[in-house]
Image (cartoon, rainbow, N blue to C red; front, side, top):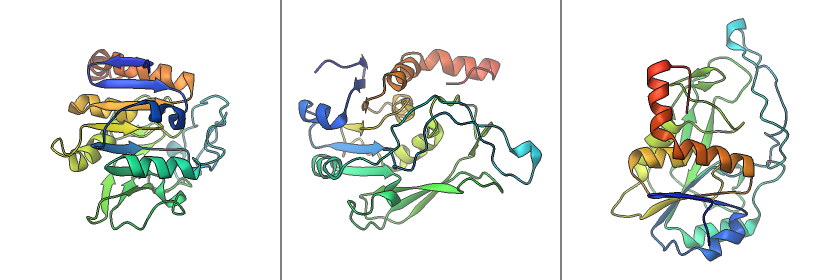
Length: 234
């Protein structure tokens, strides 16, 4: 199957992962690291403010366009397929998918360090590992971020957070690549590219695929601009 984008160890596909995955031969040594739709409506045109106690802590959210991809979670056959055909899994929003995921001792908690506001203090990721619960702290609240990073997507995850997780759980002796079935704008792909990890990303949305391709094809240039000017973020 022809990729949407391919450069070195980074490969992107545009389309429904349920249709694309059976056509790919990724092998069994795959770590699934993904952030699927939770089915809670975190999409569409919006520009609301958080109810912070500090007037300087209530930036308006960016208008991300009118999308409907978060109206419902992936179907049961998605979970059946990825759990059966990948070696291990890290799935953000796992607390929304407990009907299809077994009990796990190893949940990851992302502490957004976002202070007193009406947004959630963090997010959960389910894993297939048998180790203990782990917490990752990474500031991510409107214009306040642990490090500069442009937001292209309403539920985008920070590249730095993804790198911390991958450094802890990706073992090059155990896995051949990272599979991201709902890549969005490719933040997990950027993290993999920076760490030298082979990555396969899939998404249905043409706008997000375009943004992911742009970020991954121009990673070095965007990183240099971020460092030099602090005004152009990747």
